[in-house]
Structures are given as structure tokens and as C-alpha cells.
Image 1: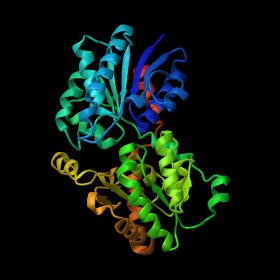
Image 2: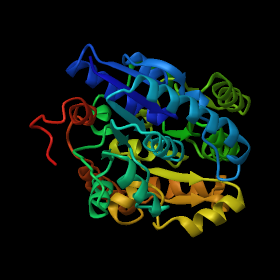
Image 3: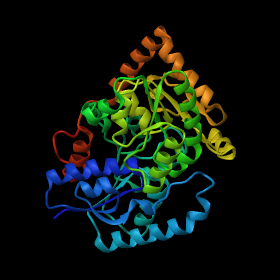
Image 4: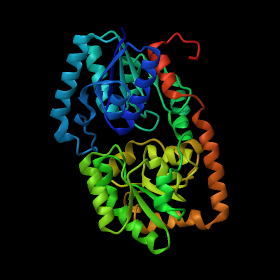
Length: 379
């Protein structure tokens, strides 16, 4: 019976891990897939030894007080892996923790395969971590073709066929419940993120944005992400309703599909918006010191994946002091009111979407990990 350890540390990583687990169990129904998992991974058939809530991802400065707890977590997980000795270890996203875990496992003598699913963005910043990928990992399974090419060019074993969202987005539809509630009004989807850090630094700004947009005849609707903890979900729900705004607690993708434009925190949501053909104003706020440090470390001009794929800025990026309600509302209205800009932006979005591949990514990951000799894998 195959025994595979799987670890994820946040909502997006849990979705990727869940997709992999689901497809892995189709290939090998008796396999045991266990580890640090979230609800999607458990739903897919994974055995949760630790909850992904134990790995709290924080800003550059906020992580310092949590170091002792994180180190204890790493030590406990490594000890369990070495005791069980699974044939493979699959580490999904959360690079700061997972690179440290992989290094510890190799140092302690683990000889099984270690795979990085959604590896660190070494192409964008902290490129020195490439040496960790070469030394400690047998395989990387990146999300984007340009990541794959970068890893190969630096001597890292990498395989890629498609981004997992491509197939997922194909199934997104507007439900009767959504139409019944919102009708066909000019909805602006407001996406405050899924982490404490996101909501702490962006919710007030988006509430201010909603005030402006509502006064101008739009219907701003806040997404309460299904993966949010109950405390964060309550905060978004209550703050939005106190301000007189609507919330949607169903699929954020459905909300974006039913909208005329999107504004939200930089991350996976921007890729989802692009795949749905929706314009998005991307925002990201952080402490000024954090921002100053990041500006010195980051090697790319844009932070949003759609802009990186397009090779130019198709989604406006408002960072730190630029992310004000007035600026966000202005960028949305520029797109909606300028026919020529809208046509050019929509065309660029289509070109960028074409670079995302067209294959069932979780199935491909499972083939690479469970049955690496399968003919569908092209090295």
C-alpha cells in the first residue's frame, strides 16, 4: 500500500492538496495520504494528522514571535515522517516552512522522494532558494509555464502541463440563488482575502471603496470566502453589513462571474478573475517597513500573475499608500466607462489565459507522484 505524506499551510494550498489527493486515490484507492491538511484535503480522502491552521503565515516582521512554535511544529512533523518513512513527501506551497522541513528531513537521513507542489516563486524573489530545490527535492510541480522554464534553466527537475484553475473555472455557473438575490445589477465583487493579514490591512479600504461605488449606482458585494475561519468570516460579514453593504457567502468565483468588475487583494483571486474574463483592480497593503524590504528583494515589475503572463500591466496594481478607496473606484470606472480600454484589456486577458495550459492539473500531479512512469508525463 502506498504511503504518502502531504502538507499544506493555507487555503490555496489546501485546494491544491485536495485536488492531488482526490486524483491520487483514483489511481491508487488503497493509498494512505496523510499529514498537515485542511478541510478540502480531508474531504478528498486525506487523513489529517495536523490541521493546516497550526501553520500561521504572517508578514515579514510578524513571523518573529511565532518562530519557536513553528520550529516545534517542524520538529514534530519531521519526527513522524522519519518514523513512518512514507515513500513520498508532498509539500504544497508555504515555502518558508516547507523548505525548512525538507532540509531537516534530508539532514536526518530521509531518502524517499520529496516533491514541491506549487514551489516557491524563486523567479520573482529570493532566487537563492533554487539551491534548496536542487539539493532537497526530487521534483517540482509548478503552476505556470514560465515558472517551469525558469526552474529547468536553473537545473531543477520540473514538470508542468497546466494550471489547476483552468479546469475548475470551466464549471463555474451563476446559480438560481445568486440571480434571485442580486438580479442583474451592476455588481462589483469585493474580495478582501482569506487570511488574517489580508483582512486586517484591506477590509477598511474596501468598505470605503464600496461607499463610493454604491453612491455611483453600482452594487458592491463582499465575498465571505468559504475557507475563512469563523472569526474572520464574522468580521467581514458584520463590518460589511454594519456599513449597509451586501455579502455573498457562496463561491467567490460565482460572485466574480456575476459581476461587471472586481477589486481585491493580490493573490490567486486575480488568476481566477482573469480566467473568468473579469477586470480586476489589484490591491495590496502592508507595513511601510515590510514594503521597503520587499521592494529591495522582489525581482519583477508587477506582482499580479495576469500582468506577468501578459508581459504588461492589464490589471492596475495599487500598493501600500496607493490602495485608497478613491483610487480603486477610479480604476474600476475607467475600465467600465472607456470602451477602447475595455476592448484592449479584454483581448489581453484572453491572450494571458491561453498561457495557462489545457489539462487536468491535479490528475497530472497524481500521475507524476503515484505513477511516474505513465506515458502522459512528458519530461
